[in-house]
Image 1 (tube, rainbow, N blue to C red):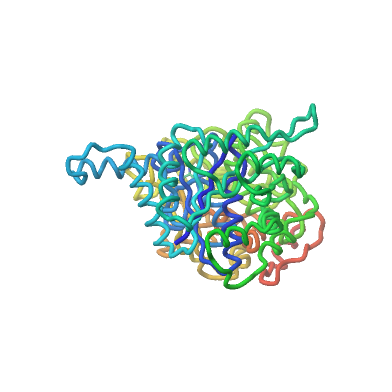
Image 2 (cartoon, protein in one colour):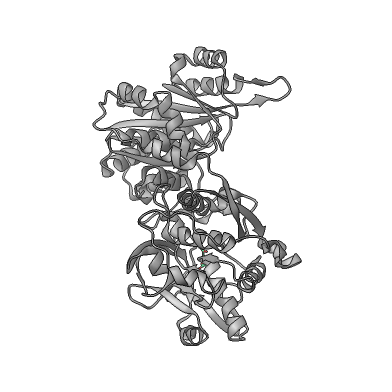
Length: 549
Ligand code: GLN
């Protein structure tokens, strides 16, 4: 087993996850089995209870873990399902240590950060690596060197560096800011962050210099000198138009070859996914605008998997979708006029009552304008409420938003009743879904059974199924027991689809989510009256989309 540890310096938000994933992707191109882990130094046991507005999206793994959004990046780059055990936090480590102490497993020892907590970290890393059967295990440490909460993790990986001599590589990602006034790239903060890492006892094998502009040779030289590295071990990573170009940027600098050499590994085969990625995602013209209606629109990371899914689908169609972010609360105050001029509308996942009337006003406007609509989870639930209000003239709502509502068309899942703990208790993870024949969903996926992921407590209330159907709503997918609606469509409109599941979690850069692809395709064809080229595996329902336009 070999390990690559990725640390960060100077500031957060540098794309450490993208770097780590790109390295992993390049190594897997050499035929090496690679998997990844994310360590988050926060005290939460998992990301599930964190506000997406502050922390970004909660990524849901197929096995039902609510994890850090970086696991989504790993899945997208490696095209491999990640398990919930591949994300550990201070909270999850301490919970284990404390439970063990309560059981008396430490036999009277005084339980300390070193060695007990660090041992637990090391054992979690090693266990996960061996469960993954990885030859190389890439471990990304969240946070920035110098953070107090990250120290036990850095100490644990420092020890692993000694214990696994010759089988570890340390990569440090640091920011090199560009100073407008003097026109220079400033290397000092990155130098200092390497120093901070060395004080802990870790000498990086590579320094990845994140910058907005390309670094000059003398700047690279300076960074190398102060980091005790050769200039080729200073990897330049300037901003690029798409994250999917990063593997190629690294490949061009020989990063994979240098890492394999250090790990004493031979490449087994060679594929060129980095080239496919770079060619699909570079030079994409901007596409027409899609409205993105939600509650957490100021922090784009809140919906990162959805944004990436749209990018994957857009790239397959030959453009980069332009997103018009619309704050649902703003629609509540000022009406849905921001919708006008877009070619498609998405209503995004969410929780709680704030902004929901704005989301429903947006859905109603999308209906009026006959715009292609895709509602995900909460967005689907609200489209059902809106439908019931519009077509059945009910004072409908979801009991999540109004527990006393006269017509609870969306209600708690039966197994959710009586739950008091919020953490990890939703309907979570992947499940098989039966897709009905003759539906847009079936045509998009081309399959009668699909597997997608979930994260919800509410669903379409079975008491209203008949009424909704009689009013023209089509239930296009069910869970395998057929007791639960998984997707809806309104066949009176060209493209009106809501999914209770989250297809974005399974979207991959070179294999976009079928329903996102169908949605974007409907949106652009509605606007231009043309059909962009489609990937060979995709078949579009010819008549449904065009007949009413
Ligand atoms: N709040 C809704 C529920 O719990 C929707 C959740 C979501 O959009 N992920 O069912």
